[in-house]
Length: 130
Image (cartoon, rainbow, N blue to C red; front, side):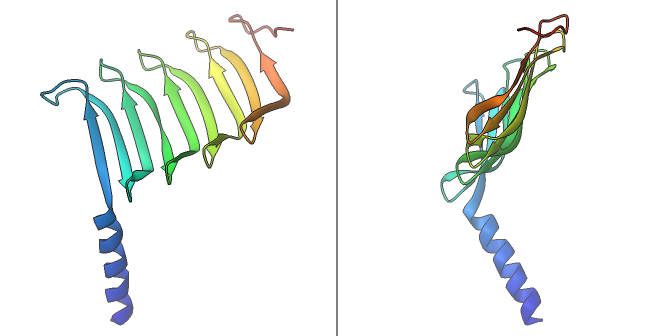
């Protein structure tokens, strides 16, 4: 019983400190611009940003104010533009960028926010650039 009560108190206290912040394009708050989870005054959790047409612009996660995990960026029509990976606010791992037609434009591997020697650039027709 005490263990259950302790778990409930921990959950309630974490909810009390976290909040969802919404930003809007308009004063009437009908056009959502972004949604961000905050914890102790900093972005922490899911983040969504929208174009004025309502389609998603980018989405990802924050970990104590820094980008973390996988972030997806989209063109205004909703097509995937890029997939970026972050660890504690720094690009890390393989990031992929696409042309508007969906073809891969670049594949860049990052370590500690810096591109390493693994970098592939392609033309819109899919052929490798030098």
